[in-house]
Length: 70
Image (cartoon, rainbow, N blue to C red; front, side, top):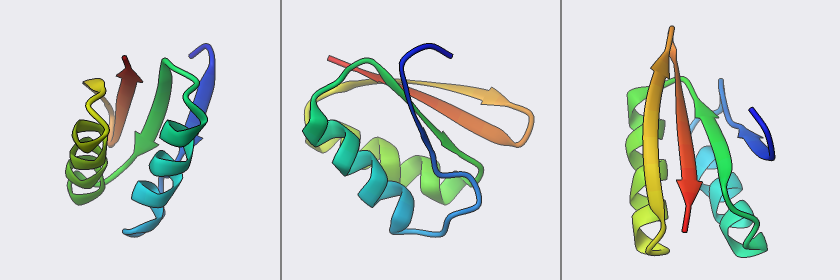
């Protein structure tokens, strides 16, 4: 993975959302968010959508890789 990576694996909500918001405000895209729970994935996707950004989700083992871009 090139570029910025927000590794939120093992963190409970709202920490993955807070870290994603911080990355969104830095306006460095694209970047990846790593989470390992369905709830965290859905919450991160919600905040990405709120910022009107694009997202793509890949499942890799027990982890979700969410790529965020403009």
